[in-house]
Amino acid sequence: MKYRSTVFLRFAVWLFGIGVLALCVFVLPKFTGWFAQDAKRITGFDLFPLAAAWMYAPALPFFLALYQAWKLLGYVDKNMAFSEKPAKALNSIKYCAAVMSVFYFAGTPFVYFSAQVEDAPGMVLIAAVFAASPLVIAAFASFLRHLLEEAVRLCVRKQ
Figure 1 (cartoon, rainbow, N blue to C red):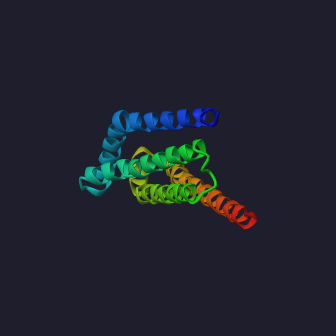
Figure 2 (figure 1 turned 135 degrees about the horizontal axis):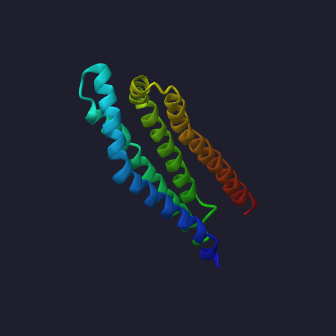
Figure 3 (figure 1 turned 30 degrees about the vertical axis):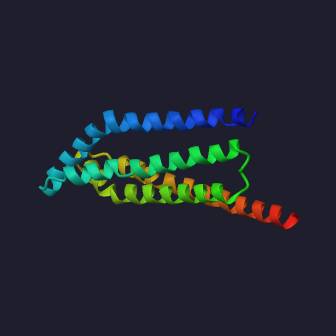
């Protein structure tokens, strides 16, 4: 019965993983080339390696966070939701999201270069939203971790 309660969430984790993997394989190579070309027009330097690193670097913490979410769902299935292991998984998710945000903020110069060449100032705003959204996930994971630790303390105190 417990496993059924997390089936949808497990499906969502797989769906997000497959979607991001597809983006990394099919979409990001084109975007990386575009950003590198626009940066080369402005700076005169070939910045393709930096653009590629910026585009692909957030994928690693993303997949690590998905793995931690999978483990968290496993703890719920095993009726271990109120233990120390889920708190550690939430803490890892928080750090992964924060690292993703740092990578996105570090790459905003490429978006700025591209916005200058294409005359599209809205691109910088979109990049800022993209960079800030993992911070929301990090804050939520931190909040959930705090609630979980308080629940564990209350359970221990009652025993």
